Image 1 (cartoon, one colour):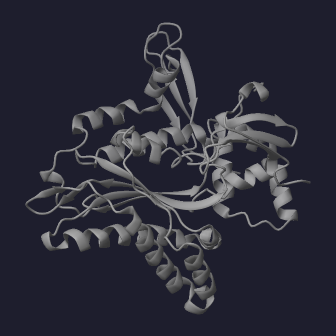
Image 2 (cartoon, one colour; image 1 turned 180 degrees about the vertical axis):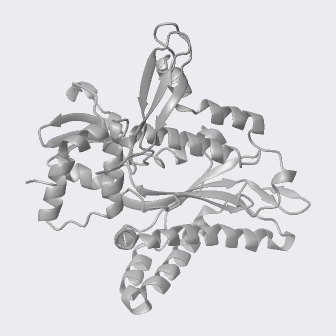
Length: 392
């Protein structure tokens, strides 16, 4: 069986007419059709599949089925009934993940102050990628390194006046080709806050951040792995990254704060791969496209379905791993919240939370809701809820 890429097509423009899409595909259907065969393949080839992967995939495949329970609704006028099967709430489910991402966007908007926010990206040398896959606890070091980098720069420049930064960090473990590539996205408030004053921050020295982030992360990894075991790799990274790790901190004039939030969180609650990029499934092979980051070329790949599954399940986070974290004056311990003007008014936040309920999202998306009686158009009422579910 061939696992690797068997066909690659690159172009400045993706000509969809050259890749006719016969139907729409879903990640869930792919797993329903191929997961059991993949598990046999994994056992035969001694692939290490984590327990959390089995758990999340099982939940996702049983989403909106009787195995996860149901709720019974009844119309008070004509007594028409409707059974609504429960969703899986898995971050690996495209359907549930969209709602989760919307919830996180609303949650972050409720915490942000009314100021500009810069979108920063902290990447690492590709020689270090596997270190974070071998031991996923090391992903916490990425958060710690970015926190130290930003906080120490702020202290060096504004420490005498006790200005404090505020930033939110989100981890992505994949690139555009969905291969393992851990990096951190940051939303940094262009604002420093002290007890009695605020200061606008307009210039962010990303050249300095590159070298500082590199040193901080490599020192943390050396402490974690051990000096003797890490020395050779550390020297290699320094010799091939003399300008530090790539850090993007330029202003993006085209995106506002709200758009940046949605961009950063786009894959926090759903699979790392968008089903809309699938062009064709032909037997055991799948064809999909992505736009390469380094040169913006469109790439079309055809790979074995098992290779595709391997690529996306490695990004399922461990149980209770926090992919979004708050620092500085955005942390829970901050004492400035009551004194600041918020980006979004609390009443709008409350309305957004209510509007993000599944039946209202159904109305917004499909102009219809299963809770509206098909006979008399009355809103049905909940009569019974079965909450017992199982994965067996």
